[in-house]
Length: 186
Length: 187
Image 1: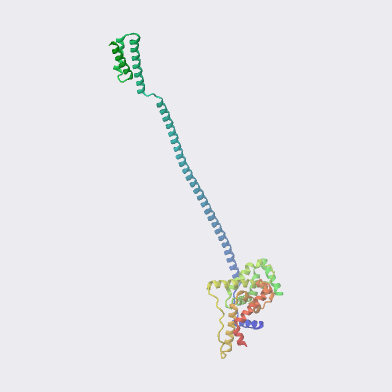
Image 2: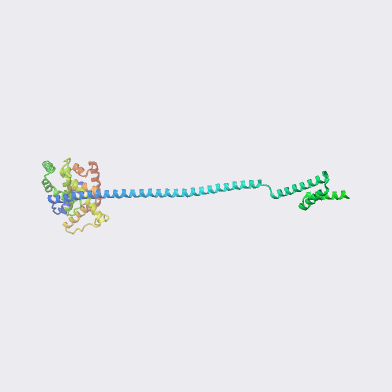
């Protein structure tokens, strides 16, 4: 099939199809449609611009809300952290105060124990005083008997020692002295 | 040439604000635009919408027209674009898969009336042209049916001459293939 044959066939096919239905295009109709088209374009542009502005506004509003919310969340989180730190600090301070108080009490106890350790035993002191008195009485009795030859006064003093301090070792000494005096009389 | 000068005057008048010049343009080209649209759309017969859309677009865009090409070429370009849009919208509306050209498996009965044979034959030709992709159908219509010169066809389609020749060759091959039955009958 040659190009001419194709052209011929196409031409015949076109002719047999017949002309298109008559079209009624006139200037007034075109002008009306152009006016509508321009109006649609104008309104459409305005609508698009308005929609864009609204979208931008919403977007901006939404973007600010999350920012504010995020900042509030951050502030709340920081406040929580501060509160927790405050609680921790209070607990630590309380512990420190307790430790200091314990140390102070311990020091005071040590001081008291040291003072207590410095106080002599009263029983020993009494015993010493008893021993000293018994010794003094035996010493006075020995002077009466050996230096002044006052045997009766000496016997009375030895008896006083045995009577007042019967369990003291100076009472035993007094008993020996009384035995010596008895033996000397015999 | 005289027609081209006249077109330029009409465009100038329109640029000066005389919209009646557009009325003259409509009178001059509406039939030709309708015929072109009818061919590009596969001979549907009713092409008023496309023609009106074409002139509406021309009316809105004529103030920007700088006569770098002839008014006829410019209007043809608008028509082609409107036909493409129309076909695309129709395709979306129908959403129907394109069906291959139905070529009868048997030759027309020899005893049949010669007129009916011709009618069926040309119907097949039109179906074959309709089945061509737009990039092949448009050069075929402009070259063989509108009888435009090659450079004008290339200008209207916005392609160079080599591309146009390639598309025409491929279109012819397809038509030969689709109309092979006719070829055999012809012989």
